Amino acid sequence: MIADYHMHPRGPGESIEHTLETVERYVEVARQRGIDEIGFTEHIYYFRETLDFWTVPYQYERCVYGLDAYCDSVLEAKRLGLPVKLGLEVDWVPGSVEALAELLGSYAWDYLLGSIHYVDGLGIDSRPTLIEELGAERAWERYFDDLALLAVSGLVDVLAHPDLIKFFGRRVDELLLNRIHDRFIGLLGDTGVALEISTAGRYKPIGELYPDRALLERGLARGVPITLASDAHASENVGRDLEQAIALARDVGYTTITIFEGRQGRQELLG
Ligand SMILES: [Zn+2]
Ligand SMILES: [Zn+2]
Image (cartoon, rainbow, N blue to C red; front, side, top):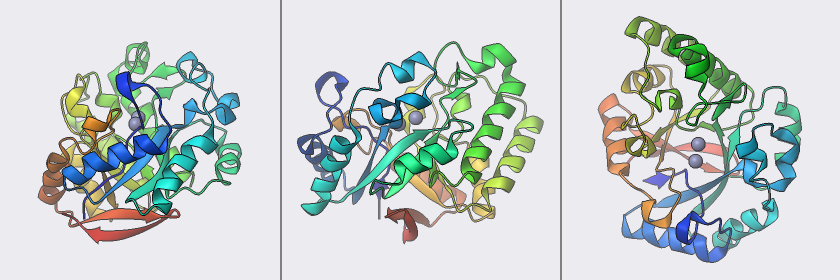
């Protein structure tokens, strides 16, 4: 089984297109690339129902689309028998877990991705950055502390691009990195929340998969499940480089990936 569980439905020029036709176009690319199932995970901040949650201009300025049209486009494809799942990429908003859970509770999600793109209004993969404000050591710690809080919140099923903090290439020394990884996996291991292996980082300044191999090794040892992801923002990028994510997972020792239906995960043989 190969599933790409992270993508954003877009038309020409990366225009937002929450339509059945776009879903069908993505499915066709997946089919050509031998991918068995794909999951759509639009950014939560594109939906006007969530406007009250955002304080960062990049997020509230995009908050103009309807959740129903997005969900219907994927659910209609599902009804037609296409191998698609309905998800959402949910940004962590400290203090808003209950309100977000209530809002999202009335939709038929197969799974929810959790992401941290901002901490205290500062960018993880955008400028001005948290690293410029706090320095690399403190920024890495803050990022992973928030990621652990997101995991234990119960709000999401998978952590997207888990070490996005490496986006710009600023790392911390191995001693601190090991301590950060240990503490994070220690908390994540009890939650059942999966880690995403994403190929998107190959096309960012860091030029690598997310997450580091060392984090996955600790995850495997603690029984943390995984998903695979391209984070495609265009149909031609569905499944992009997924073979590299699969190779890393296998190399670490993973033999299964998580398949979701109605927010229930199960393990299927990888590949
Ligand atoms: Zn993201
Ligand atoms: Zn994404």
